[in-house]
Every structure is written in C-alpha cells, then in structure tokens.
Image 1 (cartoon, rainbow, N blue to C red):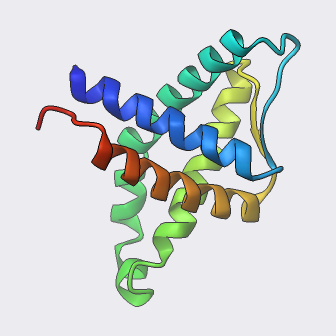
Image 2 (image 1 turned 120 degrees about the vertical axis):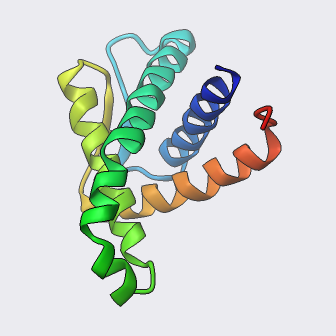
Image 3 (image 1 turned 60 degrees about the horizontal axis):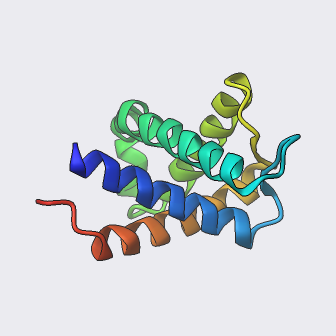
Length: 127
C-alpha cells in the first residue's frame, strides 16, 4: 500500500512539473482553487498509474520488435500515447486535464519519466 501511495505521489509531482513546463498540458477548471487543483492532479495521477499498469505492458509486448529495431527509443512514443490516453480518460471522467497534441505528449512523457524516476529515487517506498 505504501508503494502505491509513493508511486501516485511521484506521478502527481511529475505531472505537475509537466503542466508547469509545457503550455500544451493543462489542468484547468471552473474553480481555480489550489485544493481542487491538487485533488484533480491526484486523481489524474491515479488514472495515469492505472493506464501505465494495465495498458503499457500490453503495448510494450506488442511493439517488442520495434524496441529492438529502435534500441528502445520507441519508449518515448509509448509514453506519449499513455499520456494522450490519460488525457482522453480524464476528459471522459470530467477531470480538467488536457494534453494538446502528439508532440506535446512526447515532451510531456519525457518530462514525466525523468521527474517520476527522480522522485522514486528520493522517496523511499519500503522495498
């Protein structure tokens, strides 16, 4: 359970950094209060974590030849697709998170990956 909380907080922090750095990734809403924004960011981080847990392994398995052919660079595209899927699911769940376009998602996926990795190194998860 502790590992789940740490990973969700790391995802929320990483998504927050991507929102802060890129204009094309937004967290908007009718109520601009900080508390609501943090709550929305945590919910989006949960959705992002579920997408990465359920969908990403299947996509990685199906694209295994491309991993070998591109020496792993296809990971950037897969991360972008996971971020776009999270954006779509967030809109369906009426969460105010949006990623504007594929190239924004590629940059956002790169930022989220680096920041999430760094936060997971800094935050102990008990393992």
